[in-house]
Length: 122
Image (cartoon, rainbow, N blue to C red; front, side, top):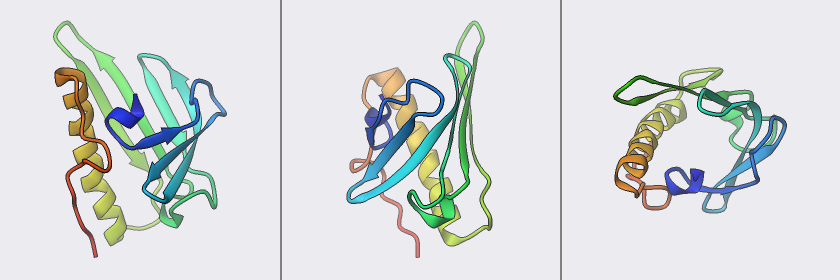
């Protein structure tokens, strides 16, 4: 399902300790599954030397809750060492991918890479 709203994904990610590979063209960013509580929380941590240097040691967390009317996803990408142009770019890209997830869940079709909204940084 990750590849339907974010990017080409390899690896199972079905248990804590699994490694997921997220491919953006020729570039691969790896994350280790740290928390996996279906319907409640998913957390991944970027290991050293397994993708973008600025992502090393960062953690991506999805906290999931719901009420009678809707489901909420509280997203965080934490642990950045500094606020750089790449950090700003990733923040904006995560926003577009969260909207892609929303579209997938509500309309049946997301906008994963390479069909995502293009945002350049420099």
